[in-house]
Length: 362
Image 1 (cartoon, rainbow, N blue to C red):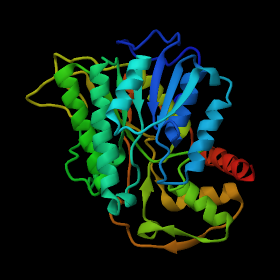
Image 2 (cartoon, helix red, strand yellow):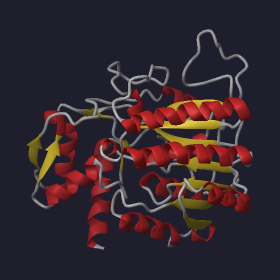
Image 3 (tube, rainbow, N blue to C red):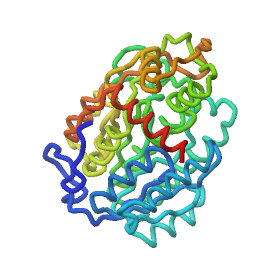
């Protein structure tokens, strides 16, 4: 999406704003030690906001990468406005104490148990983090009258849908993984709080995010490590896959612009023909992706080119809970925020590979 000026903030259509973009706000970012959370923290700090970053540093993947992300924030030029809190969202008393202490102007809730395949073997981790943790966040925001809660949903909610591109107003009633079901549940829970308590909420359905500091369980990191080690890479569905790969900078631009524009109640909302992406309540759901799906084999070839090494392919059948294609219609988010994706695959992969080599040398 269009790069944001760190000082001026995004240009968006007329409408309500969380602030006038002069900075000096205090924002809670959950999952701040995560891939997206780290980058959103950097962007908000760079434009003058104060960020309280919360994370439980769990061992779903190597916590050292999470600690290194936090250390990068703590060593950055805006470290004086960043505070890291190691805590778990299931601790409601601790969460309320954190809100009492800081009086947040807004919340970007990115903490969750991620991963489709992991949900097949660890379902209770998803129930605790994605359901209990999410309702705790809703309760904290309700109790403290938070001006805007932006939270991470997922493209996984589209489940078995085959009509492309995915639209926010498509039915999402057929999830194919527990992870997807918990993310759809989050959208329903958020709407309930928007309706009952007037809490402005915006859900963002992320589409295959990649880039520097990425998650090691995702294809770019898995493939790069294996290729450089001379090991075969697992290619599911025999390579007949498409993903709407979205570079992290484009994601951050969309998240920050969304945070700055809370939804408001829509008195003109048609309850006789309701649109799933909006409501009579202050509630929105948006796709956030590149809107340009890439064949998995093209992605692998681009990665090979950036690495200067050929991959050994281990062709596998479709994995349980996976889908053959994702493709985001991002027109609604672009109309709402004024930002649009701009980072091409070759540029994004090149920047990822440069970071990977530097990080692992260090």
